[in-house]
Image 1 (cartoon, rainbow, N blue to C red):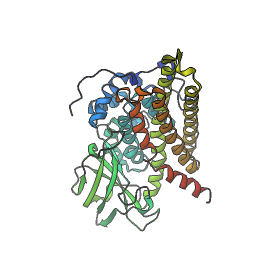
Image 2: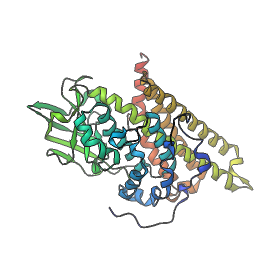
Image 3: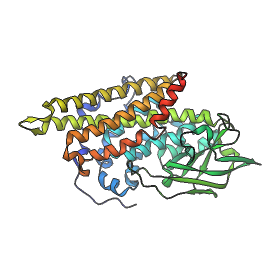
Image 4: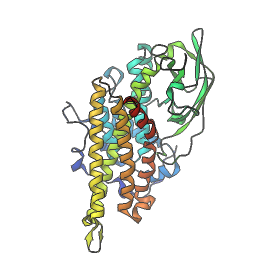
Length: 402
């Protein structure tokens, strides 16, 4: 795709390097270069013509090349596959830094999906043959990935996935369809979550499928409210033949793999959100100190000051939930309630602070040129994808025995 023509840079690309090192997940005890800083040197390229790309709702291929050059996609993968050998916390820090640096939230969302959709489960559960063949180009971002989980009729109800895979000799034959699949219009590799047994946690299996496999059809990109540069579409399967050697893990292990992936999907994508919230707070604080009304900076008015104080509380609360939950997941502890609570807290705080930022910026915040209204549109998606806020609260209540 041809990049958008140059346009004046908007003020929402401002960065403040003096505060960057103070706004990271974790305690900074990891050795080596901090992954949080990976995106920072590429800020100008990542933020060029953000509003133009968003308005056209196109995937910014040139910026994807920047993401590749940054090394961010390599963080959680073993060095033998071209990765940095980083930890779960390292990956969270890298994505937080991307969210802090990059104003194209759709691009960041596609990058997070790239890391978690195929690479993470393939490294953890795939055969050596599949890892050797596919992980290196996934780690570099040369092969773009997507995972096909959600279905039109089942939504977040993964236990009742209806897409089936029936064994036929050395192959499985897959029939069905998936909906709302991030990266699908541009993906080279798909991880399919399908039913190979009876309904329930032991009836799911996972398969790695290339885009050009006969029987796999990718629909046209779907228009959406926010995250417009992260493409989304339907994917359908009709007599799709997949060799049994392309199965990830054992037959029936799909729910185990899904649980492994979804914990990380939430931690990674909402670390990205935390970085976006950090930037928003810094931008609002700067504006409240410089914008004057009735002879005073608007930050001197209690109504504005309290909103900003609440934004600071929201950022630090989000950080604490992500840090603590990430530590639990990394250590193998039971973190089911923590993950659901983290997703709910961070997504709702992001939406609330985006709306507060519009209010503080006033008329300027309502204009597309400042990028604040784009934050609101992007933030709404966070309370829906990876399981809605209602689903998360239901899960918490169930785990409490209600």
